[in-house]
Image 1: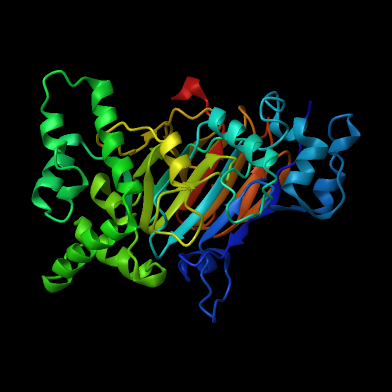
Image 2: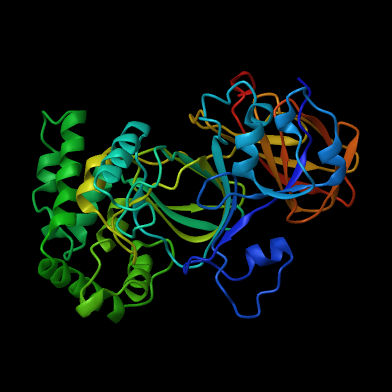
Length: 437
């Protein structure tokens, strides 16, 4: 079967209020005089915001497999619609495994104001939750809907600027120290340190201890939340301004950004002290598995995830918070997150390995004397040009690439990227090639 032609994509911008106003417009060559937030650029086939495929006349007339479904007319079509018609040719042998769709969702995130404390469900949890909410008659676009699809949402992200985030529960000894030396937080669980020092506390006991602590914080009466946090905020505001490496800094920011009606305070602030505060340098990343509590605080990153929009929130948001469901799906493991630096697998490509089966993220840097040789041998690839100018050659055709260009290389496509002006920097979404990692 001959590979389908390489095509250009147009991503879809999400204008969430936490987004920045500059990075994505600059990437796409757009003016933004009204300073509208450009929070996310989606590249994929999720039904909420499928990318548009630009079909040139030459690509539309290119002979392909005998199956007439691959023949498409010039113009634009949603990637989800194109996959309905020609998914097997584009996705390849794993087409049925991914239910005829694209297995991943590729994004640029520009975080100007901190996102919610959140976690994502496992595949089994998503399937059950989606069926349960359908049976309850909750519309897919309802604000109180937790499960928008049946998929899980493991995700990886690589920082393009300095990037601050919360990621997973801190080591228990650090939590005990924080509770001991932060008088306003000690009432969350006065016996935490004593229970932690118990000689017969195994791994299951440690998870149960952490579950009890977090459940207590998330179910505490609002009056008690207000009492503890108001004392904390009063003390912090009276002292010297903390820097970004301190949870106190993000607590003050959260209190300013997320006031609750009636003068109440958001219990999501407790999570800032219980989770790892992580600073990523450009080129570094993390992996968020299902059930890992996390939050993005500030910065720009390229993100790749399974094709899902399922989010369960634990505060610091104006969106729906379902505490019971969040507690049900969370994994109460503690420790420090792994920082991904990637591994160079060729002169031009660095891959960021994760356990995910649906995606793999790579950074490609091609220079004039060293072009990049690529092959979509595992499944379809989406290429996003971040910097430079280049030419992509595939199947006798050539596509000019510049900053913000997005292309889809279907399964089986061999291609070559030649830089035309210094270094060309490209991020690639693909399926994992376990033989190379």
